[in-house]
Length: 155
Image (cartoon, rainbow, N blue to C red; front, side, top):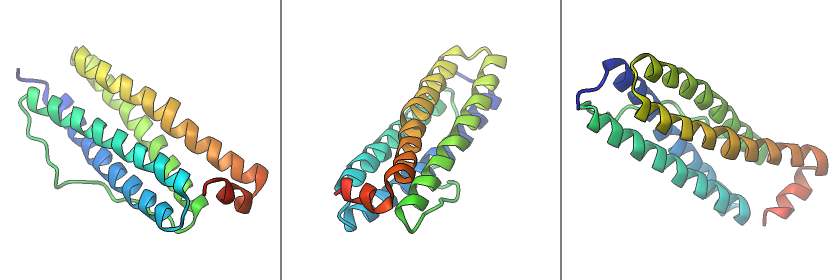
């Protein structure tokens, strides 16, 4: 089924972001694992799997709409060097992704592509109500109980 070029372009842009998010979560999770922060490792590894799933959905949808996904194009990652920096980098990414998803949903509405819109709306829900919310909670905990106590709780 030939899809709207605007929708395909929006999906390609989102895909570049999902690939970078996947890789950012990948490196952060492995850093946490190396530091012995196993709970953070497990959660970020799960987030990496979620981002991989989002990218997979986008690839399949681009192909269905007769576009060609570009897996060589990916946005620049923001890798932190401390736990708070890493959490903040990931949260900033989720905020940016939420804005891009909203814009892409609007493009889908204009093109009357409600299947793609619904797929992106589900990803927006994951981004806001799961990923971003959890990251906000972690940064809030660091502020409330201190970094040392927080890191101890993540062993």
